[in-house]
Image (cartoon, rainbow over all chains, first blue to last red; front, top):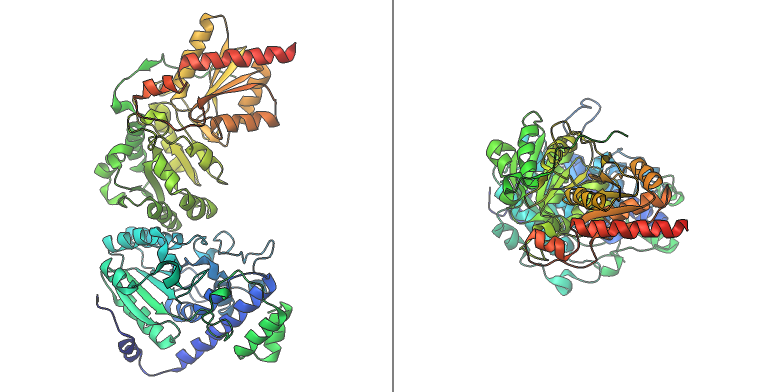
Length: 302
Length: 328
């Protein structure tokens, strides 16, 4: 399937809104709460880009990735690389939300000796699959993984999450050519397209548009969706799984700072920011955090 | 310490025995029985020697096009799936992708072998843009990176096997020009181990890569002037063999390092750091003196930049003079 799926078609493919969607939305909210709480305790970190990708991560870990579990501990697992490594708080929060890391540990973000390093480090956290934090590299690593798995005839699929500012790295386009050249259908990359980067809007720093046309021209199965719409995400990942010849790119339109109104669509919340007690309290309130849970998040016990 | 067996130096004089050719052939030889080894190339296989691999084991050869950054990081990803990727390009293009080598290979402790052809002024006519004089320093500064620069085709053959069997990231230099054959099959290369090729009392000449044969020549020149020079082959720049250096310092009281690299941060830097922490002694550095190269034949350039045997011998005399002035 080479054609771009439109949002409406993806909705249709996903069927009626079901309980799974509601659950994943709740998990995404939890990822957002843990992310901002971790950044609050760290005194630094990147809230904007962590909040914008929470729904994507919830869907990936909730339904897409084939990971080991109690019944199948030795599964040859799917690989997910957070190429936009500065969204590490959201990754740890996701693991915590799915019981892959303790909530208390996710809140040790950026502390000396913590496994929750400022950017994911695979030696501390094997599930990070690679060490990231320098844009463009995680994407290339995911390409190498897809090539390596295919070379060995192994079934796992590879997923990568990229930032939109990351598109400005030349390495991304080296990788885009490479994955298309080798027809890596076992690779699916997602762009968290929140339109903002460190200093300003993408358009002001170095314009990316027409982004979908670029990926299509580079030979990718190109899907464009609302990255906060869980049903749309589910359908897009399903479409990527059904693609047989091309690598898939999901351009997920998102809002930076999503879920915390005072952060939404403001570049100053890219990072690395220190949250005041008033700001974290306000953020947790916006995220419908019940008082007992808020207390755990604020005292660091999770 | 036993002096290592050494065949009489004999200039082969054909490109068929360049270190890159020796590497390319050895890679095929050792990879046949090592199915996890794969080779990555950026449209330069004919230059790096891996065209032999492409021909012999095509299903394990991956073309990345002229895109070294993607290739380097992708090697980290391939290693994550259990393969043993050998990334090959020119030394200058390894520098282009060094941040990928740092993060996606070394920081992640991936079992990737980076093999760089065309190091130093040995590159010759391509000129300054192509002559990497910074690679040993740059890769040596990356935590956990092993750095190797073999001296002759036999050592290259053995080093190739050694890096494939070693677990961890490695940067290894080959070489473009015809090399001087120094070692027979009885030679034994081991990562992290230097070898005394010739014993001496007055000065120790420590060299790697193409400078090893020049150091041996320099020892002959010095012997003619009744100066006894020890010659040490130091194919592993990192981890450096501190013990053999401390022993050389105690026995000879001064050292000359020789490398086809900037005098800053490469073999000379590694030797100086080791000696400063064990048995300090005067050290003189032979190498390119913090400048870029230019076009010319390798031998002409070696003379121009002061890398030939007479320059090493002159550095030995300076080192000995400094040693003697300290003793007075």
